[in-house]
Picture (cartoon, rainbow, N blue to C red):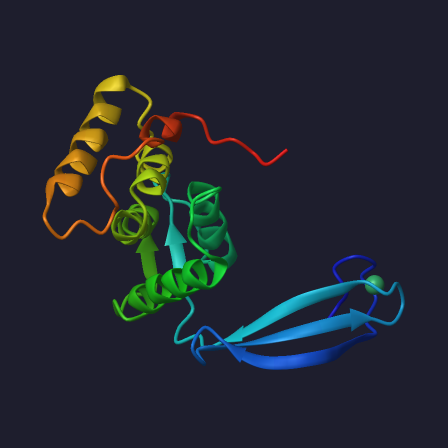
Length: 175
Ligand SMILES: [Zn+2]
């Protein structure tokens, strides 16, 4: 595999081990040309998915993009990387098992929101505000009401309406 730093072709696998409860293999690689180190993951791909955007544009589905948007939503939340990887893998499996090659981007967004809702309420609001283009206050209120409803449920997985719900408005980057 090509080195992401120098584009050199001379990279070596230094370490290889199962991860995500044996659903993936994680490999540590090193570049002989520049000494750069990076990690790759090997996962089962059941089928090639194509994302159909709202505009009608089509592009190959990329797990990394979905992972990134979920990670942005979960930034500084107490959810570890393994848990996020598992959630994203579960989402991809579900998309793959829908039986269609073409997947509307809205379907991916809805599934991701559903998964986040169970994982972390703050992340859910962040994600929803981006994914549904919740620019208007009214729409944002709708999501908050949904979260409040979740928090009121007896078997509340989201942890209740703790501090930080308002922080969904500002996704801060680590400094
Ligand atoms: Zn290199």
